[in-house]
Each structure stands twice: as structure tokens, then as C-alpha cells.
Amino acid sequence: MSVKRVLVVDDEKNLCLVIKACLENIGHWVVVTAQSGNEGLVLAQTELPDAILLDVMMPDMDGLVLFHTLQNNPVTQGIPVILLTAKVQQVDLNQFADLGIAGVIAKPFDPLKLANEVAELLGWE
Image (tube, rainbow, N blue to C red; front, side):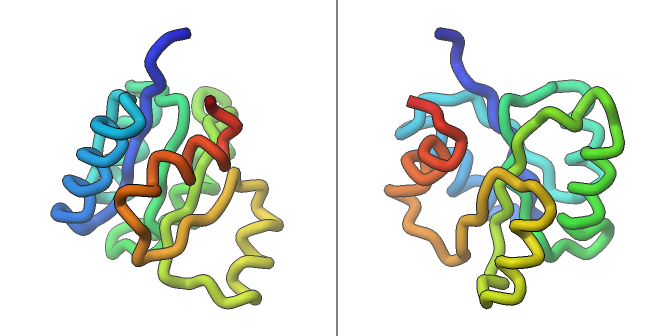
């Protein structure tokens, strides 16, 4: 089986570095990071990752706008998206569930468990 490729889109540079290190070292995946919604959109279209971890609250283009943009593009609509968010109240989770996302991982998360959480949400072994 080929190595999975994951795109992480989060405006916090240090968090991107932590996520990248966790997913590469524990999950053994190739990880590409973007620090804005616009950069994430370009990388999603050019890198065609196996999955996207997407921060909900970002300044230029929030995660939900980016998610809808990805869903409306035939090139990227099939890429599963996991939301990374501090917004984990039931009303938020219900809204996210209606979007057809692959899952939600709450911030703050346990870096040592992140790769397993992602794999479980996506059905990866």
C-alpha cells in the first residue's frame, strides 16, 4: 500500500509543525502544511492529498468556507476532510455533521494520539 499524503491547513505555524511531526513520525505519512485557506486550496488542488486536516477558525478564509470551496471543485471534492477545532459544543458538532466531513478532532488534542485518531476517522489501518 502506498504512503498516505495529508494536507494540514492551520494558521498557527507552531501547531502545523507539531501536527506534521506527529503524523510523519507516528503515522509514517507524508505531510504538507498550509498556513492560510488560500494556500490550502492551492495545495489541495496540486498535491491531491489522501486527506485534509482543516482548522475551522482562520483569518483570511475560515475552514468552513474552504471546505465548501473544496466540495464544489470536482478535483478536490472526494478528499476526506477532518476539522481541527476548539468549537466542540453540541450545536457546532451537529452543524459539522451535516456538512459531510470525515470527523472532528478537538483542540487541544493529544499529539501522541493524533495519528491514531486520524487513521480511525478515515478507516486507515
